[in-house]
Image 1 (tube, helix red, strand yellow):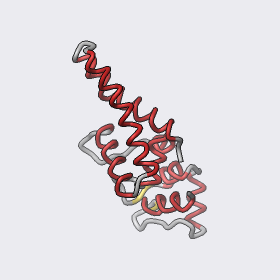
Image 2 (cartoon, one colour):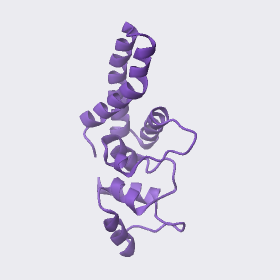
Image 3 (tube, helix red, strand yellow):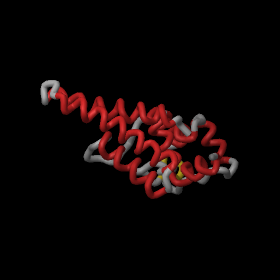
Length: 150
């Protein structure tokens, strides 16, 4: 599980880059943006606590709201494999699984679990992780494995 500090810093950095920096450009450095930065840091702490320590409903709600805000798009959420190795990716994997996919590739499952693609293949071959009928592994099975390791 990622540290609370690392998770907060990633959330703050992403919100700064995706929302606050562009707003600062549009508002030409208005002081209101600095107030928003302070608020975002405070709220990032609350969201991190909800995702790390909250009940399942609270954790999922916080994670999904952040993902929808930070990664908007017309298509389903499909982050690069390395994203799952970030603090936010790690907590999403553990608390939600993949929020937009019923199954994930062996490479994605490996990144979510912190092992190699070959490691996932071995887990599937030994029956320790199920294979999804459409290929890959069920996202819920990856989440369940992560939660059982806690």
